[in-house]
Image 1 (cartoon, rainbow, N blue to C red):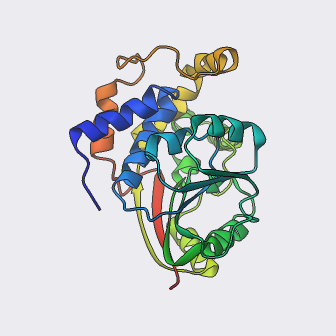
Image 2 (image 1 turned 30 degrees about the vertical axis):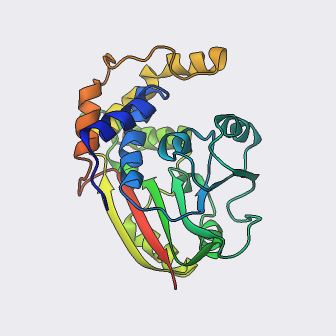
Length: 268
């Protein structure tokens, strides 16, 4: 695991914050820093490639296979010219040879998939024996520790607090917000034998991300009108200062963090 320089951290933050709404970019910057400290063996299988922005920021060339079930995001990914090979496919049915990938990644994707175990089975099949699967997901704290829940609970509105949690996670399309023991069970069933994981993204940062969904509404308008989330690159964002996010990327680990990063080895 390699360490990142100050220049690396600022580059990562630029790549995320100048191309995504700030609330999303600060989380993606932390996650990108984790992958950049790992040695990902090629070819790399990217499960849930989406519009390709994360891979554009993370990979500078290299053999990367991108797969996603949705056509429109894949067209954006194609335009970024990151992936030598892009596939429109469900995660549970990848048209790839067994053992063809040296490593696999999936960033903030698996929490959205209702039947996730077949996807893990397929990742294990595509990976070569001993290959590693790196992925990041939000955890249970997105159910129990949301800012809106805390406000409503403080006001004595416990029922509304629970309803708010359900509403927020429905809008975010979160399904698998599970603790590590649940993911470990799934991974072992799928054929992964060595799993390392850590929590990151403090509760306070999650609260800023949560409130940022409202502050980011103009970004949604710009995306629809101009095809870009961010029109003006500015380190002095009124909601989250650039320096605050670089500090978060420098010190991302938190035992009580709201997201979890996993590294799972396919059985040799």
